[in-house]
Image 1 (cartoon, one colour):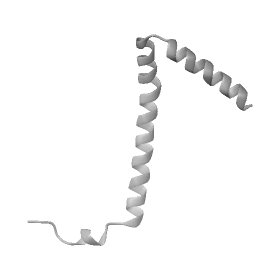
Image 2: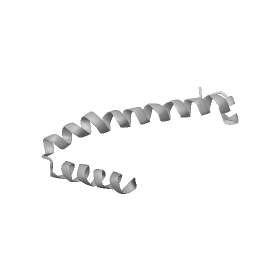
Image 3: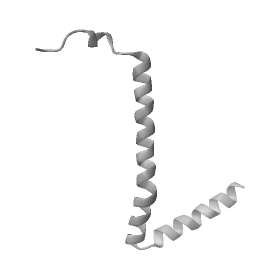
Image 4: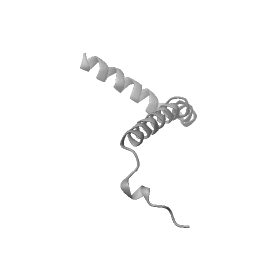
Length: 66
C-alpha cells in the first residue's frame, strides 16, 4: 500500500516540479492558502478555548498603568 502511495506522490511531485510558474502559483493560491487559513483558524480557536479554561494569570489582577 505504501509503495503505491509513494509512486503516486512521486508522480504528482514530478508533475508539479515540471509545471510552469503560473500553474504552480495558481495551485498554491487555490490549495495551500486555504489550508493555511484553516489551520490558523483552528489554532486560534484552540488557544482561545485553553485561555478561557485556565483564566487570567495572577499578575493580570492588578490595575494597569494610569
